[in-house]
Image: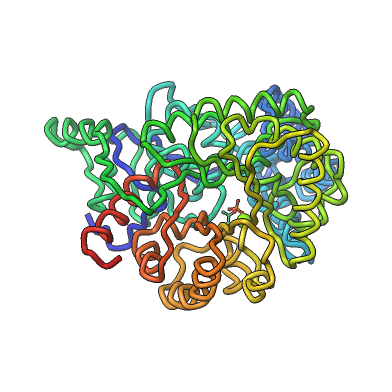
Length: 495
Ligand code: PEP
Ligand code: MG
């Protein structure tokens, strides 16, 4: 098998039969029975709405809104009536127009909705086309042109691996696969349906129709224990989206949590969470992990992360000032959940020292009002160009966590959803830019870690180790790589 183009999006091994989703282009395009096609279209909308009932993930909420968008509906009906198109052809044409408009929109948020619209189109076509698929109820390896996060979320229990023709390394589907520890590769190879297959990202290979020995050795690898060697002076931390992943953080013996993306706690609901609800979530997380470093990030919303019931701006400071009550409620819940006094709180997308100082004083005022005297570090994500260029201004920050995902977008215009790889020369450039940050933190005794996806890429991580970075925070599936990279670095005696 020619696998020269194989790219690893999420590491791991798995064995299962493939489930290949082919294109939905094989349908009749013209009709003589306009009424029948309009009825089929409405029926498909009704079925899709039913399928989405009870799904309260934000991803599906957006799909539901689009599915019932009156303009889109009218356009489809109009195409059926005036051009004698079938429901399938009319939907495809209407969605193409819709997406062209989004593409021309002067808003990154709207442009990114293209993925949601395409996902919704595939959902409707799947309902309409005769040879529609239904997902297996046993384990399978998903083979697709492009991964739609909804397919992953709907089949979380049975998807053991993913093979796609294209995928961005920083896309939400990719981050989700890494967090869920599902091996994910891209290749142009044509892979048939229902074929027993092994994905082994470590050796960069796919084995079609594997032998029993090969299957047994893959199964053994999936349950193999990771040898965690002492790495004194270095912290291997975890990035999590919610409490569900904390068991993995314990399983891999991470040193703590370097990034808890709390916005996902809000996205799973259709109203703001109350103080009690948030307190229960955060204190359970802290108690489950035990007395280890734990860093909560205040809700990071805007741009690509929307909360349907909130008015958001671009990501950053203004979202807190404009959602004062939500910010204060979250901070109170954090502070009261600081059971072991090991908590850190950080703010995302900070641009200026004024923004940081304002938020820090706000948190300290709330802490004082609560009469809370536990130790609490207050820091920030270092993920904007402005903050990086003015690092010496941030004297009040207790620590920084480098967010390479947003930083790569801001510095090098890397598109999170599409970029397959961050070119090496850009990593070298970032390495140079971060030398000042390491020096500043060493001199002022401030904590410093990296929590963007570059920390999970061994070659990149190695380059950051070389300039003195010692703390990294990665998705649970990347622990093995990080552990090996740091151990190799320590053993080579370069530090
Ligand atoms: C980052 O930008 O690197 C980061 C870790 O934050 P997120 O991916 O949640 O934007
Ligand atoms: Mg970010």
